[in-house]
Length: 226
Ligand code: DC
Image 1 (cartoon, rainbow, N blue to C red):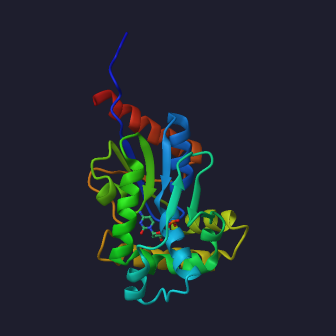
Image 2 (cartoon, rainbow, N blue to C red; image 1 turned 180 degrees about the vertical axis):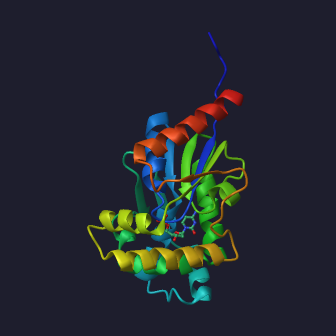
């Protein structure tokens, strides 16, 4: 019998909102029997906690002062991911308009990033996992076995997001996505960027199943050489 233990590994999936990150990451984790971590949900939960505590999210010093307070817990089942703040389930609230509007400025505050980086690394631990975000291949897990950078045309991204949100206004959704892209890409700490060694997949003209298949093929190819 083969006693070899498969070493644990990270699959890092980065890209802007609406590029297909969440559906792809969950699908890949499900197909490969791995855990899944949505780091965007963690930044959203931190933002929800700031708003709930009445912190002025445009005041970076106030945000920094509160960054260590909320207790965040993320569940890593790809079929049923969960997120709580101080024991309260905030899965729905973190997708609300006020959170979406405030999440990029809150995410730009270094103390917020440092706190969540620590939590993310603790969750990643030593087991295999698919992690999605903006800085996973560059900062959180630079040694990831596979790094993927997903993009899609802004119109396709807005259409996907608007459909998820139950048919919200397309032009407004596209403007909100592009505005978050600008803040996420321009921040000093861990900006959204295509990490070194990442495979770029433009998902505009592919179905979800096709993109999942492409990422699974990359993982299998990497496994074959590791
Ligand atoms: O993936 P999402 O749209 O739910 O992410 C929400 C915001 O969280 C995104 O606009 C920027 C921030 N974020 C981040 O700064 N770093 C990450 N690794 C993930 C998300």
